[in-house]
Image (cartoon, rainbow, N blue to C red):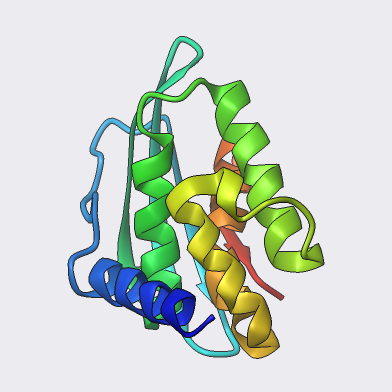
Length: 148
């Protein structure tokens, strides 16, 4: 168990220090702001959909290590996926984080987010990017979301 905790910490810290896809997508089909008022995490998620595929996804903002790492991992996992695959992955991650359902192993790198369940006050930090993605994929024109 200690080895798993160390791996979790290493991966989270690596994505915090070197976030992937940390940039603006000027021609994004959706740009949604996400905010966690409890701890101050704040991000913009940019999604560019071409046909039924996510051609590009990126984010900018600032937050704790868990929030930033979650957003970074999200962008890595969605590049090139179909919208349907992205929606399925979104539901799997939300179920894992909020209900402890599903398999962390089946999610690959995203499985490290399961460790957040051990710290209930940090679940919203990990959820911020995913709830923001949910709004972006829904296409309801929601300019911002909050974890509250």
